[in-house]
Image (cartoon, rainbow, N blue to C red; front, side, top):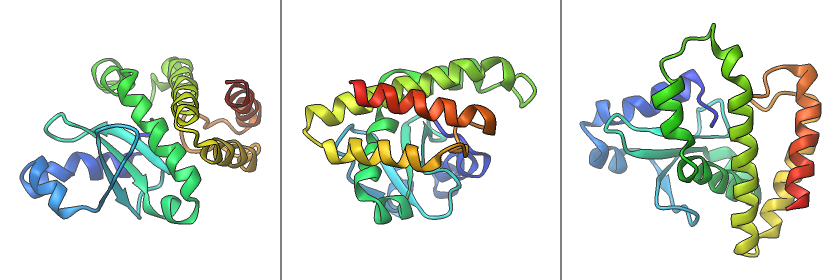
Length: 177
């Protein structure tokens, strides 16, 4: 659940700018998401690879970086499945009800819970992709996580020293499912 400030503001503004969710669907590019029935927007100028949130009307939405979908389609499918899992596992609702009101200072205290949500969404996505025999998307996710090495991915992995260890944990869980 990569909720960057710029991307979150863009999504929150979707309904406000266009006068509601229906008008939003006509204005911003969307893509078919075969993993869940959640409107999935493709935007180029978002700092995250993908994120899940609620629009201004409280409807679930997913945003995927259009360049990620274009340049690495198999990894893009993993991202869409991963974000669908955030919605189906209740992470987005929990974030908005429990964590959304917190400012940056208390983030330190909820970081372990956010990390667990990311790991749960990764595992859920792998199971979903396995059930559809989309092993290329699983391998693309494993390879992309390996490519990040010790660099943070933009989600909860914001501490460079922990990032390498956490990527290894995710890769281990992904390959063992």
